[in-house]
Image 1 (spheres, helix red, strand yellow):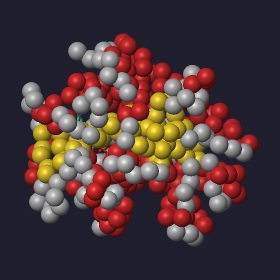
Image 2 (spheres, rainbow, N blue to C red):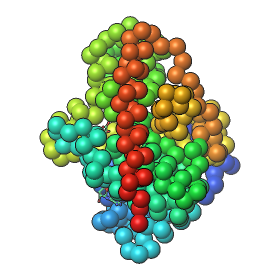
Image 3 (cartoon, rainbow, N blue to C red):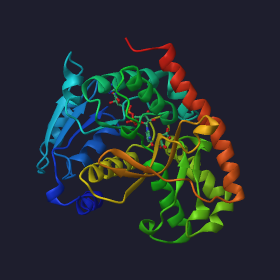
Image 4 (spheres, helix red, strand yellow):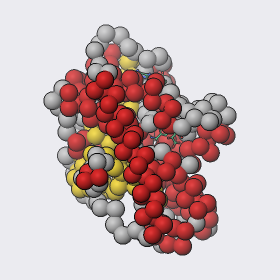
Length: 336
Ligand SMILES: NC(=O)c1ccc[n+]([C@@H]2O[C@H](COP(=O)([O-])OP(=O)(O)OC[C@H]3O[C@@H](n4cnc5c(N)ncnc54)[C@H](O)[C@@H]3O)[C@@H](O)[C@H]2O)c1
Ligand SMILES: O=C(O)C[C@H](O)C(=O)O
């Protein structure tokens, strides 16, 4: 309920409200269900479309009884199910795909999730080419480039409308720091840049109010491998779902607030970015100011210390490989 009241209190003024259809692809999954619940509680969402290869209508029937104003409809993979779910969507969240089991990296999910995301991206490019696409499915470092390539192939790519959801990394960083320092996580805004897996996740504690943490290997490791903690604890039953639902709902809320004209909405997100293109890295997560056009301004990484410089170097190698792998997949396996 805290999340609901927080989303509601941060919702933009009624005068800026507009019709905002939000579609969730993979809505019956571990993330999809609580994410859809949180979206139902968001007054900025006027219509909720819940699609899954199985179970979409059931989740929709359940959520539709919640007494908020938005309409809710579930969709199955019938010949027109996916396109109907996507038509007129302003925001599409994609948590479709398999999660990790202990011992796996996110890249180990590539073989299964790449084609799932490719096919869903094709449907988005055809049915809602102007929607804001928020990619949650792992490996995010590769699935976001896959979506970009699919939109490019259909001549509808707008880099300002494609977002890899890395919100969970800053949510974790803020919570972990607050635990160490005995502070309120609301006051801990930790910048996290790079990508969304292992060493590609780079927390910049030197820019926070706790610069001492930038040489604290334990907390750096915890932010980079926080996802593994959950995978291990769930012991084969999947990865983060509830914290991810909160993070995804926060990101969607920010995109909708900015779409409604609110100024100064900034979120970390993995986007088509100029920051390290000269090093061959086409996508990078940094603080991004959102606007009605989607990405409004990509903030530079800013000053980093010597430890963080090394973390960034380690990030670049893996990140470039992950991005190139996603692009190569689409080149070699174009959707039918
Ligand atoms: N970006 C992040 O920070 C982050 C955080 C946590 C999890 N994830 C990723 O999110 C993904 C989903 O995780 P989960 O725990 O919800 O998994 P899950 O298995 O519980 O749910 C996935 C859902 O996707 C559905 N699905 C599969 N193929 C589909 C298709 N073609 N179209 C529509 N729906 C389809 C399944 O039926 C299922 O309901 C995983 O890849 C996971 O690694 C990302
Ligand atoms: O760790 C995972 O595989 C899921 C997700 O990317 C996370 O960070 O929790």
